[in-house]
Length: 176
Length: 399
Image 1 (spheres, rainbow over the protein chains, first blue to last red):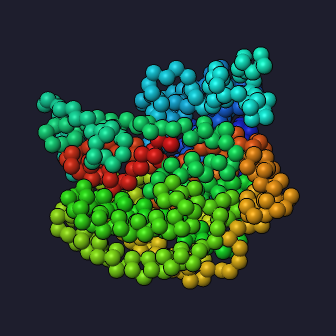
Image 2 (image 1 turned 60 degrees about the vertical axis):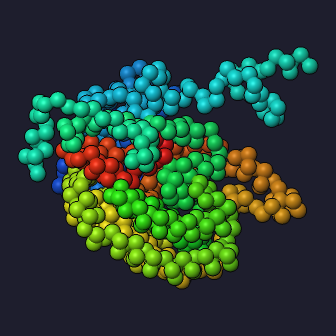
Image 3 (image 1 turned 45 degrees about the vertical axis):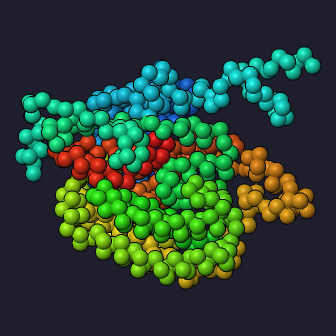
């Protein structure tokens, strides 16, 4: 029902619908995101008036679709949840802000910017929120490994493992 | 009321800047608020958060699934069992694991005890902020009894790491059952005593009614969930809308408020404590017989005795500890009704030993952004009260 209504309203969009563990997931192009979500919110029969969650996922190997923005919407009237994904390229990580529709999007977008570096155009106050202001990278991107690659005191070979790429082994062991 | 707020938008006198926090005894956690004050009235507030950010989502990308449970402890540390069990159920949903009825009921008992502990802290702290310390000391004794029950079941008190994927680490012991029975018998009377100290207390009512109100419409727009949303009159509760862990079997009501102010939030939490007791009584009275865990050798750690005596158990033990268990690819959103509202887990698995991405939907983080709007035009002392009645937990806020 929901998909039918959406296709009638936006006939040009390929929704690529799939159902993952009981939740309908659709894709929307990033430039159509605000009209689509505004339609879902304001349509009297759907009333997706609750933004449950907003986050991003980094897929570094997916060319031109490196960042997936994930929106979870919820209609309390029909108790229906919907996941909308929108892909943006790493060369231009930009998306429109939803702050005009949902006040809740403000900090969620700041968090997404803070960790992934997505620029939300139209956001009233896009600053870092959880990390320090003078941080110069976006830590949730996959290129930032959790462990510091320059550390010399942790050698995975002690634990029977091969070691991570880019980690230099301690020279003392090689001499023995 | 409306015109009153407007007059503070266009104030042109000299404003004082007050720095409330990050470490201030009245804020119950590390939050900073830079307040612009006109005398005693707040003109604007600028919250700064992130003081105890610990990069949980990044950490989770390097940990096997069972090692993420202790991370969830540290989200809302007033009700960590709910976070733990919510995480276990997320992984169970991803892996398609069914748990026995007994596990579901045990989980309900533990989660409702955690909800009681969470709401008790919040409500007794509202009392403290209005100057009533007595209720706080009374209710800390009761919270202590809940913590003793956790301790009996899992060995820890605050950061519980309770349960396993597929069930519990051990069954309810006779000592636990003794403690639970005496709690169920004695707690209601003590709780009503605490309630009588505040509910119709003139000073308390004068301080809390109309303090920090928010309308249902704004609350929905701000993504409020849990008691704070219900205090505005919206009857949204995950336990009823998307029942999990057998909540559909129990008979309970969702209390709602009218004005969404501090008093309504207090009253909603008080009634939720009574409803939680009802749920625990029903679950404990009908506790099914059976095993305290699902029969899942690939996910559930075998008994230590078996590990030392049987080859198969040893192999499974090794595989689970090294995180080499099979997990399907997929993405799951699962939510539970946490102490503060809808606690969601958005998990993407690529089939590897650790999640590809894990995002926590933290209710505190989402509704705390409404705070400046709620305290605009209020007194400084009301701002403190509003914050404690919203039950903003720093751990959940900053993840």
